[in-house]
Length: 140
Image 1 (cartoon, one colour):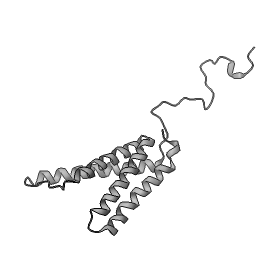
Image 2 (cartoon, rainbow, N blue to C red):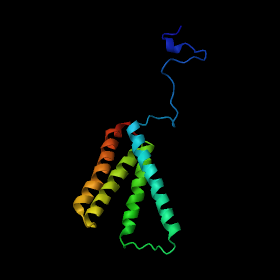
Image 3 (cartoon, rainbow, N blue to C red):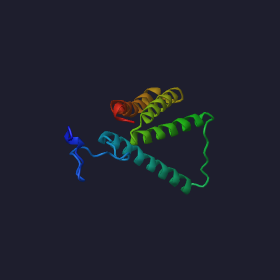
Image 4 (tube, rainbow, N blue to C red):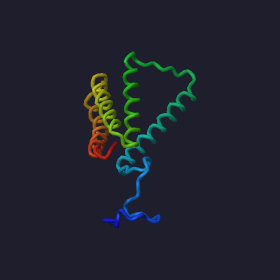
């Protein structure tokens, strides 16, 4: 004799709320979706802008200072961090915050107008970091 209703074999019916979630179906907050959507759209626009610049002027020459590889490396790290946000990964939050801090210090030290740069490069990354830290416990 079963001692609990859970020990009774089911005939194809499951209890309400006992659905197992697949690994690909997880809850992504709307705010993170909006943030990531903003970044994805802005990256597409930047890529299109570069394509237009290089296609319209054949004599356009890239001249970067010697320390620009550092900016490129941390920009790629922030892109990977935003993809981490999209997939709700804690490593994405940590990577984005770290790269945003490094890029902030870079823009302060190598910019001609540090006060304007601090305001511009501090507002959006700090908002994104606060959102990421708020949802940090929900992430994998």
